[in-house]
Length: 197
Image (cartoon, rainbow, N blue to C red; front, side, top):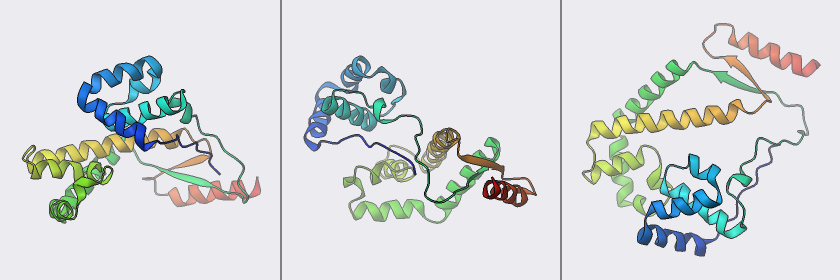
């Protein structure tokens, strides 16, 4: 079982920070975070996460990074084997690009247009989702269709890198080469070894 401590939230503090962002700009808030939690400031790149980190700092008096410790585990009730499929980075990059092109070909732009009429822009999370955010910018005339596709591909690749980093740090995962023909046999050997270990 994974142990994850979620940082506390406070709607009043968050609203105040959003107003400060409007009034003072992101650099002023970034300076505050740099003084109180330099580790978080060094990796945060967008205003939403900047506000969230400062919200935690102001509520707890501690740091946002304190809630993001290395993986900590409790033993599982049942024996568990965790397998990860190890896809070479160039192959993964190509697959991500193809997936985004497939999504666009199957109507991503039309989906975003329809969801906008249903209130997509009012959701803080959904409107920033990869693909939705980029194609909302197309509707606003900020980007071309081609630019939105390329930005969606780039954002997805960055997310994949972050996810890979996270899972690679989990020492419980045994990695199986995804492209090798005997990958199923390798996975079964790992499972069998764990069962008899």
